[in-house]
Image 1 (cartoon, rainbow, N blue to C red):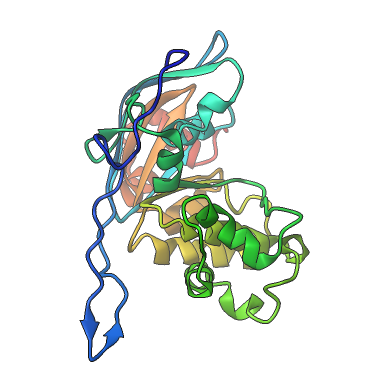
Image 2 (cartoon, rainbow, N blue to C red):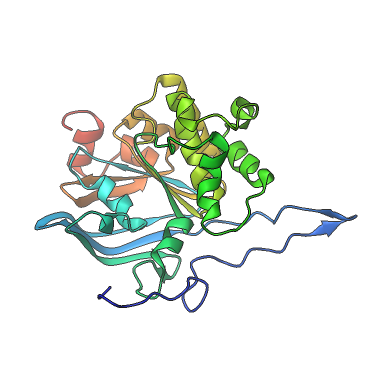
Amino acid sequence: MTPGQTTTPIAQPVPMRRPRPAAAETDGARRAPVERASRPVRLEGLNAWYGDHHTVHDLSLTFPANAATALIGPSGSGKSTVVRCINRMHEEVRGARASGRVLLDDVDVYDPRVDVGAVRRAIGMVFQKPNPFPTMSIYDNVAAGVRLTRRRVDPEHVEAALRRANLWDEVKDRLDRPGHGLSGGQQQRLCIARALAVEPEVLLMDEPASALDPISTLRIEELVEELKQRLTIVIVTHNMQQAARVADRTAFLLDGRLVEEGPTDRIFTAPRDRRTEDYVSGRFG
């Protein structure tokens, strides 16, 4: 975007979200909106740089709706840069830039008419290290994103997000306590609840369990399995067993280039590229 250029509100000529089905009413009681399928994300010729360093090279890849796709590859292969490009976090780094197209269905998130804030509401992100807001309560951590788009946050909305993150039963009696007082695994699920509270269609997860103990890791993996029923999920992981457990599809990146992608079972049992076989078998990386 050039200096002085303005963005167009997200709901007007380039909407990021589909219209939601109206809530039905039966016998005077309101029902929740009908569940809807998520939307795929498609990368077309994505390139990314940090200054003069060309990190991602001409990447074209589709992340199917209502599925989890794992990005695997050694450190420095561009995995985290890819997910940061998808929700436009990459451009927040000084000197960073990207080219190509990132499509949510048929909407290019880099279209200058699209508001970047709306992109990040439609495409949520969970980082490697849990980052609850340190001065906020558990309740306010979840409500924080919603307050940017609404004047009022209903307690039911916060509860629903915590339930979707499988955290409600563990925190329902201490919602007014600081979020940073939770365990590491709980903090990560709190961050997931915060992302879910704004009702995204896509959830990006950058090594969400790398700093967690095995039990907390299992809970995150179980959560991924549940969430992909209504979201498009992209998960960056160095853990080959984790990719095999949670991902429907897997893409292998090396030096910022796509080597191979496909159904996870095939990538791990019958890869078509020798480099993929060497990586998933532990010969390098």
